[in-house]
Length: 161
Image (cartoon, rainbow, N blue to C red; front, side, top):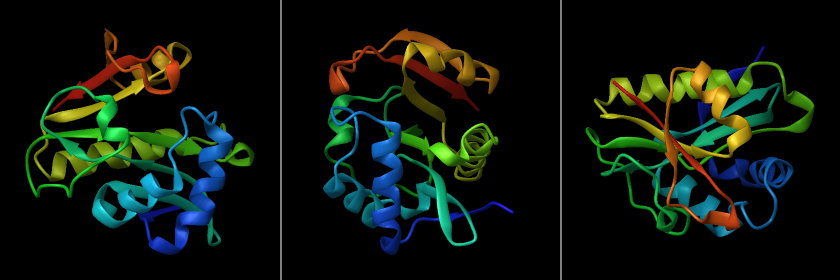
């Protein structure tokens, strides 16, 4: 059975392996960025695991604006207790655990956290091929993002409370 929990520093190696499976080097978070996220926002860094093995994760800081900006991929702050927008900087599932509903489960968990902590909504960016996945989860496509992260075109996806 898959369980969800908050990230721990001991998870870093497994998380980096999943990150490298899910994103090309230009888009992938660095080990330093992941270490900072683990330290500063463990409350919004959730892992899915089975029998002690991490199968996927979702993470993102609370931000003051409705869309993700590229600077967030380099530097974040601790999350405020209430308010703001829950962002998703990263979500990935290991190749061997895909198509089992893990990504959806992680998004739903992040939505619950956003609701519990009185966030304005949840926001993320995705590539064109994932727009329909997020629309099926109730997100609205707000068009092309200003983000140039990894040299790729991204779409703003948002879900208000």
